[in-house]
Length: 73
Image (cartoon, rainbow, N blue to C red):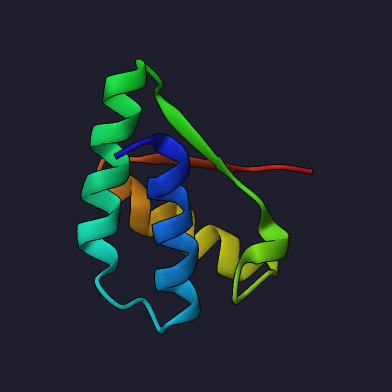
């Protein structure tokens, strides 16, 4: 799975009430390692909760699963 595919799966999962989010995070983590990256950037406009609390919650949840998240401007 490519990094782009993994990110799209995350966006879809978030839109569907976090359905299978842990599976998609594992796939994202594998895609990041395959590309030699340490963090992933998400577009906050595509998030269900596009506010500071929602972004911090997402960062925290992903960090606990070994993925560092940042957001584009």
